[in-house]
Amino acid sequence: MDTLERQIILNLKSRFFDIIDTENGFFHYEKLLNEMLSAIKALTGADEITLYVFNEWKQEFFAEAATNPDALLSPAFSGDLKRWANKNRELQSLGTEIKEDQIMIPLVKRGQLLGCMILTGESGCFHSYPEKVFQELSEECGQFLDKAQGLAKIASEEKRYKQLYRVTEKFHSSMDMDMVLGEIIYTLQEMYPTFTYYLLLSQDNNNHGDLPIRDLEYDSENIAAMQAYVTGAVQFEDSLQEMRSVLYAPLKGKQGVYGVLQVIAPNTIIFPKNEIEFITLLANTAGSALENAQLYQQSKRLIADLQLINETSHRLNSNLRLTETMNFMADQILHSFDAEEAGFILISSDSADVNIIQGSTEFFQTKEAEIYIQYIKTKIIKEKESLFIGDFSLQFEGTASFYKSIMAVPMTQSGALKGFALVMHSSPYHFSFETFKLLQSLIHHSTLAFTNSMLREELEKMVVTDHLTKLYSRSYLDDRIHQSMNEDHEGTFMLVDIDDFKLVNDTYGHQVGDEIIIQVANLINSNIRSTDIGARWGGEELALYLPGVSLPAGSLIAERLVRKVCQITDPQVTISCGVSYWSRGKNDTYAALFKRADRALYTAKNTGKNKVIIESAADSFI
Image 1 (cartoon, rainbow, N blue to C red):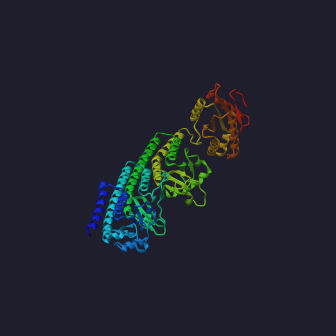
Image 2 (cartoon, helix red, strand yellow):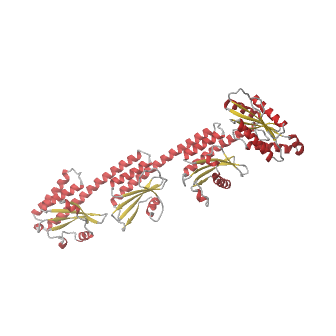
């Protein structure tokens, strides 16, 4: 190489050095390439220079920089240019493909083709330079391009890892699942705006707004995603037909894999290698953050569950009445489990009958509830286990069912089945397994309180209940009438006597006589409200008090009772009934109320029996 040739190359190297030095080692990649082309243009006298760089993703040459900006709009070279450059690593004219006023300089570094430059000038202008100059130019520009790409890669890596650090810092500043998922997508969109992303999650996912989240499902179209989830290793899915490459990165924590990040790179059949490491690191960081957020949410749920059980146990052990206990339990279950129906069903000792405890939601008093109650009762008696049904219509085929999600937990005490709690929702698979386990714990902790409430009320009722008739005692009736006369506005009282009862005893015996009393008592119980009080007054005399009931309404009830006793009892008997009434505003007493009913009963007995006589407060007979 002569002195002129050497001077040209030294000037080019000096210019390259100045380009880097003036920017203090920190520069913009595109600006650096443009500076390089300007230096070559000045030294060679070319009119235009276009730099083509091989794009590994698309396997094509693309115009990366040019002295004429319009050249950047030209289409990419096909694979022919790559084959030519690989075959002709030394400087050559392109012959008929490119005119005589053009020359191509391949840019090679360590045997690897980086790109090429096409110089355009006046016809024959490049013949004034020895071929050795262009060969040196090829080597120097190849080294410069390699260095520029290396520095650009370092700058890009620095930006990525700063972003990864920022993301990691943000992940650890919050335990919110939605924030973690949103930050993953935001970071990817910022780093790779042309890519498409999906989060394939393995857990129940709700309330994630418009994030691109899908359920992780095993099917023939998603085998790579499932492999990434099962193996915990990155998987690829390349499609030549669709011209895209898909990466599946597992969202992996220390305790397991929580989903898969799907990244779709368009217009390429090979996923870019230099992007795989960053996306994998991001997925691993996100997996750890998801695990931490999930563990935090689980601990919060566990604390809330323990608080629920503790509060419920405390309330149930505070001597609440059974109805109050069940109302409280139903409210807790409906609120805490987002349930639509909650019922508590007692099973008789022979398992034949069921009793719906007051406090259950109204649905359980309807005929539609019977299909659920009978089915669950049969299953629990047979299996002696709690039931967790995601879709009831699948369990009970052939019958339409409104409520699909069902949880049922047996209530047992000392090994004996007392009944079961039944919780339902109309949507299938509405309850989670964690909710089911919590219900089991809640019912197991509460069954003793249920049983104690029932026993306490049974004992209380035994104290104030006649053993033979199961009606209330006379003392209890007296107390309730006194209470009513202080609190209510009116009330009706009646005395009932079985006609010719001595004749029944003499004819059929005292055992049949007792059965007759029981029959009449049962008729009284079945024809009054839960707030009314039926009592045994003494012997064959019974009493009935109707708080808040007017005299006309009370007299109709008495007439109906007289008719039914005559129609239903076996052996047939009749009753006589004396009725009295009080109302607020009139000077009246319990003793006077009883005395009027007693006189009315005496009148009924002495005027033909099997009738109702009413005596008003004015002491007149009706």
